[in-house]
Structure formats: structure tokens, C-alpha cells
Picture 1 (cartoon, rainbow, N blue to C red):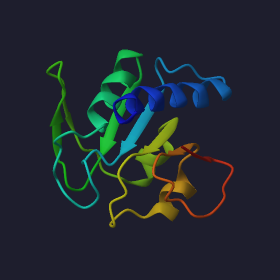
Picture 2 (spheres, rainbow, N blue to C red):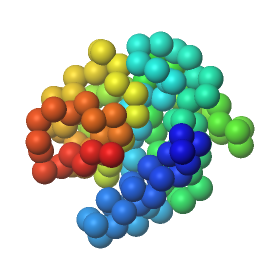
Picture 3 (cartoon, one colour):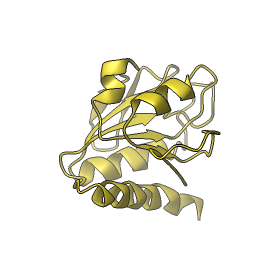
Length: 134
């Protein structure tokens, strides 16, 4: 079941974007948190890697933010660097996906700025129309 979750989450993001009349191809998606667990830099067995690769394979323009992981290298050799989590980043994407809940993240600011948030960790406590939980 755990091994199938990245593909399932890619499918959920695709459905969420489709519901808003946006195809995955060309959509800007920001993934927040790529480490295996909160507040560490360990990437071993992180489900974020196959999730990112799945979105990229569907043609999404994917970026990520993780205060503990400055850069990652995907299986296909693609190297990605963590982006700043500022207002222009949050408002400039079609979907924000919360994968790892680091303590330093300001969830209220993220939810208040992003047009669509897919919360895979069920950490957003306030009900908001732009937040969808796993």
C-alpha cells in the first residue's frame, strides 16, 4: 500500500487540477517537504522522489521547498534545488502539495496564499475551501 501512495497522490493532484479546468501538463506545482520525516534531511526511501517523478512525467512544472534538503537528484538524473517559500512562490503556482510537515513551516501563511493546497499529512487544522486533504 505504501509503495502505491506516490502514484495515488499524483492521480489525486491530477483530479484536483482537472476539477479546476487545468491539465497537469504545464501546471505549476510546488511540493513542500521532500525529506522522509519531519525536521530531518534524510531522503532515504522518501516517497517524495517517485511523487516528483510522476508529476514531471505528466508534464507538470514542478518545484519544491524543503528547509532541510537544499537539492535533490532524481533517478533520471534531474537535479532540483529547493526554492524560497515566499509570497510570489506561493501565489505563482496552481497547486501546493504538503508532503512533509516540518515544524518551521507556517501553514497559515501557506494556506492563506495558495489557491489550492493538497494536504497529504492532514496537518491543516482549519477548514478552508482551497484545502483538500488526503
